[in-house]
Amino acid sequence: MRVNRTVAALFGTALCACAQFPDFTPPTPLIGATLRNNTEEVKRLLNSGANPNEGRFIGGGPPIFLALMQQNHAMVEAMIAKGADVKATDGSGSTTLMWAAYIEAGDLALVEKLIGLGVDPNARNKNGETALRWALRRGYTPVVEALKKAGASDTEMVKQSVEKAVALLQKSGPEFVKVSGCASCHHQSLPQLAYSAARARVDSRWMRRTRHTR
Image 1 (spheres, rainbow, N blue to C red):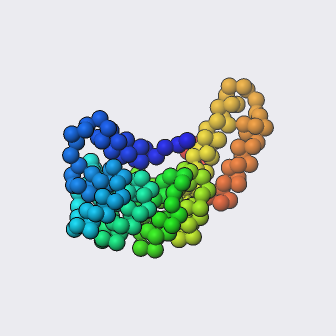
Image 2: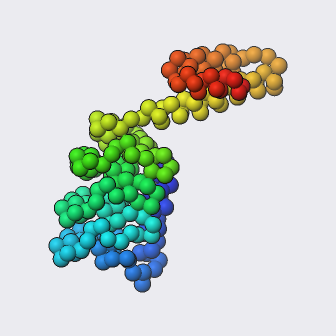
Image 3: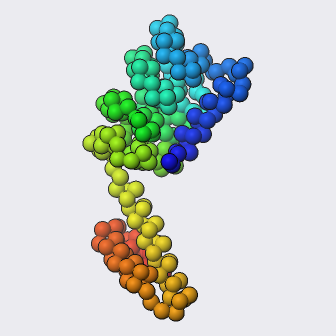
């Protein structure tokens, strides 16, 4: 299973801080309760006036990001009800919608909630990733369908995949001839067919550029 590096880094940091450093003091009590996935304590703190937008955990986002990381719908709803900024981003520029969509068992209702509150499904983080890209790493799930229905586009991802594949085919064909001394259906004809099909569908400016650099 492919793991999102941003997800792994932030989640790993959170777990290590809690497990290895028992004297670790979270930036705020609310973040501490969220790290422990203690929904009742989170609700108590919020009802007592805790600010759901205060504090960030080691370069991450405000408390709602930790709730989303743990896919705790009740906790997220409680924070939203008390004014949590659903359009905030974490240290990598990732959105709340990305964190809602990153896991196989992503909560569809939570994704739809964030979309309904105006979180942009096509927003990109510092690595150029979108919520749809995060979700597609887990397959074609209901979350993917919801993102596409909301206007999320995978056109750029498809284009990039085709470009990378065609570039490899263009490089491997000539190399086979150099090594074997003859042409091959698998290494020349089929790549040319793939290149022709890509040329008919991918941005013509990119195709012209790769053709001139072969």
